[in-house]
Image 1 (cartoon, one colour):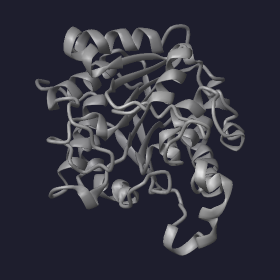
Image 2: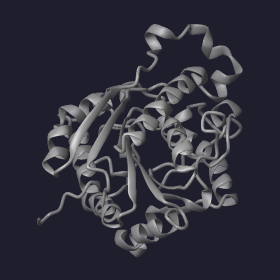
Image 3: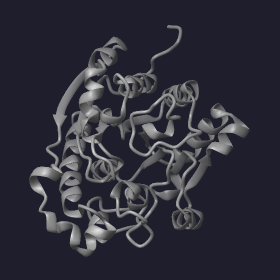
Length: 309
């Protein structure tokens, strides 16, 4: 259940956090897939806040930036911080207007700005469910690539580059209320950080053994304990690439079509959901906008679409 009657759509066409280009077109692809009309069909009003102005690698970023220390361990750091700060303000505006924030990515590094925007208004009383094939729990010390889209879950729980931590400031969630679902590709050092943390991890093996419904309800119970809000950050690569080919870091063995929809249907039924992100849709890798259409349908499941009325 979503308490707000107006959905505030915020596009963040950023691809600097990722290793492959194209995810900056994700917000447009989802809008083209009839996002607004489908949400309105569910009975909501839609306020589209437009896109955050993001930096373009070809136009704004000097070639020598890659030679700095931050570029090796946190690529395009200053530019990603700039986007995060703008998103922080846009999120705060949506919440102040009593609109449900629906954030369209862009790569997953944008979550740093999303959670920063909620921090002040929600006073840190937000739990998070991170649906992703990856952990996104690297830091500049552990990252094998320097790609910041592999770091946001660590940042929002208080780990990572000091300049990223300052945005919130982090932690923007209590890690006791942080849950990762659908993990199946986690770096070795990242796994060590997760093991030492209080983050709850449900891998695909857990889903195979216990079933999605049981895992989803456990996750909600953990994420919402003693907090007032639930944010879901959904990376489309959590879904199996046979169903969602349009993403840059696809990993076999992901969620099935019905597992993904059931998860979001249960989030809606929990009556806790207060904000949602859909990220890492890459139209350049897609087939006839198949992945963006799936992303829109998943958003609708989170907002209450039912098989039968």
